Image (tube, rainbow, N blue to C red; front, top):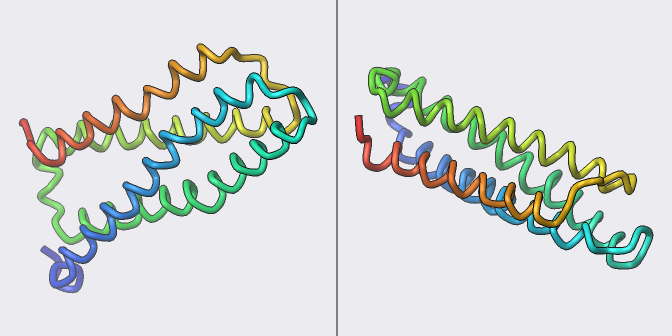
Length: 148
């Protein structure tokens, strides 16, 4: 381990877990807001409230939490580069990249709702609401069980 990070490794790991939990809370909640938003009449109080909630969730919770997740994850790898000697870490890394791409897709959909241009159904968002859950389960299994 690199000494400067190594002595703080457990703190870095704790901050990483906190950031990931915050990011995942948003990733699980934002598409649920989209489910409700689909049925809201354009320019209604409900639609405007959902737009505000979606924007604030993304900008003030999800984006910072995602960036901190990446920062602390990279610091953990810098402190212990041998983590990448394990197959599970490669799988976890790919899943985190996919989660980040999904985050960006959710952000794009928020912009469509913001200008009342959504064309997708409730069922569409209900299905996509499950994607972060599946990825989260796989990421946790990789990080905790280290299956290979």
